[in-house]
Image 1 (cartoon, rainbow, N blue to C red):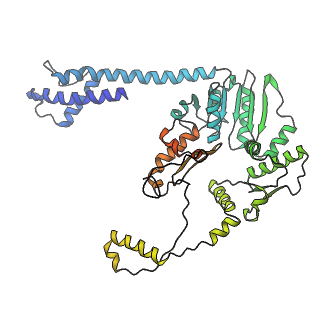
Image 2 (tube, rainbow, N blue to C red; image 1 turned 45 degrees about the horizontal axis):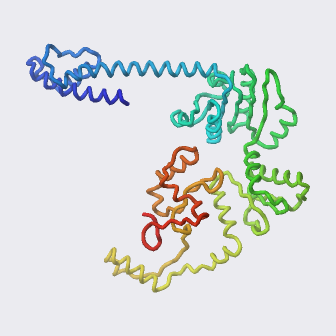
Amino acid sequence: MVTAGLSVIAALLGYVGLTYYLNERPEYAGAEPFDRLYYTLQLFILSPTPLGGPPYGAMLSIAMYLAPLTTVLAVLQAISAVFRARFAAWVLLRKRGHSVVVGAGPGAFLLARRLAATRPTVLVGSRIGSDVASRDAVRIVDGDPTDEATLRAAGVRGAARVFALDDSGAVNASVALLVRSLNQAGVAVFARADEGDLVAALRARRLGVDGHNGFRLDFFSIEDVAAAALLDVHDRDLDRTAVVVGSDQFAHAVERDLIRRRRRAGTPVAGRVMRIDDDAAVAQSAATVYVSASDANDVLRRGLRLLLAGNDRDRLDAFDERAGADETERLGSAAIRRAPTLRHATSRGGWASLYDVSPDWQPVIGEIAPGMFVDAGTSGHGFKLAPALGGHIADLIIGAGTDPGLEQFHPRRFERAGALDAGFGEARILG
């Protein structure tokens, strides 16, 4: 950026300086703007055609030194970039004891960020840009992870741990086999499998035992790991009935772990653990309910429907949507004040609806549970605030620096009775 800025300054000074200089030279009196631009560009390569003897003037004199200097700087930067990239690749090929993460999804990047806090880490095949990854000291290597050259470039020959997190179990298996053939120092490979049942079968065949040259391979299911983390927190009462709503892999993983925990504790499983596809059949008061779906919106829809079940739903169904005559008159008068021609219109009545708000009528923005972030309650203001708040949530997810001014909207304010007292009018809505 500095070189580019100097180049622009040199070009402007050179163009203006040449204009004055050529005006004093009769042989160049007919020079057009494009001619002067061409002569200006020649300053950058030390060969301006019309330059004769002095005086050159202050602006042209500065440009005569500054323009070739920026050319030299640009060449040096280009050479530096090439050799720096080559040197970094050379160092990576010979690195020892680092971690390599393979995968294009956000989970791979999150793992790489956490690993980079304790040891050098390389991320292979990610969609994350190098500029973003470099902030967390994560090195990006592009290419096909099933290509031997790509894994060589990531330095798997000397890696201590390799995590294969591609969405395809076949790709992860290919990565594991390639690492085994390339690594020379002994490595632990953790490969994601498509299904939890497959993980159990692979482990039963002892495919994860120590092998040649210290090579160790283990398989895991992200769904099983996530289910275990979820139930470690929420499945404390093993006598309480648990219902899993959903049919995706995570729902099956939660069901398996619920059963395993009860069998290990000697608690009866029959009738205590159920998995169903339709949340409408759930009796919320009699069970702990786990909702799973591949679409986050579907999870919210199902969860909200469960929250509105029972008495709450009865009260909602009894809500009178008809607007009274006095309210219609009051709102109509306000509309006429804004648009006087509406006084000739005939009122057809009105309809009322419910409006979801937080206890203090302010947005709720932040992490409401480990790994779960929310940005809600901004009402119509959310349309104009979406780019900024979306960026804030993205920074929260990846652990980047955030605007401390938005901390006041964190949901924890309700736990410490810290409702906000700001906004507009009686409703206290920001805006």
